[in-house]
Length: 134
Image (cartoon, rainbow, N blue to C red; front, side, top):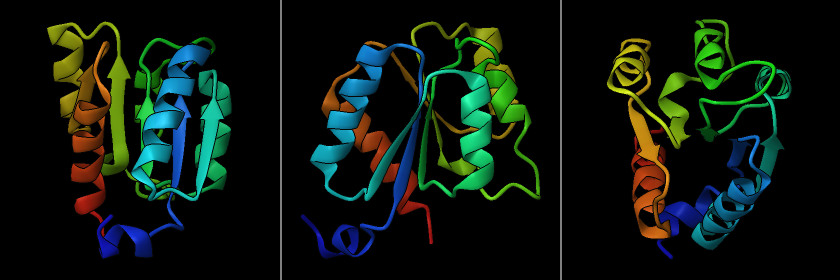
């Protein structure tokens, strides 16, 4: 593992997905990277909102289709007063129509993955997000 990632072990990741099997897979992928201290879960949009208000995350894996509040609704809650930023969001979804992708891009989120994907694809996206952080 490269030294820069080791130094940043204090990073936390939030995995927002109502599918517990997907959460487990993403948890494993994040653990294999060895650069996250805490892996936090939210299985619905309301829980995700609470976690995003209370803790800063280096990575936010966000499913669009969730109960109580969608991932797209969550993206709309990010503003200049948020402790988390849109640059740290990785949208992970089974269905991304072109219209929705366009809306998400317009909202300022740059990173997407459509399920299914493999660990290598996931880690490449995550490293890009983490690499852009100061």
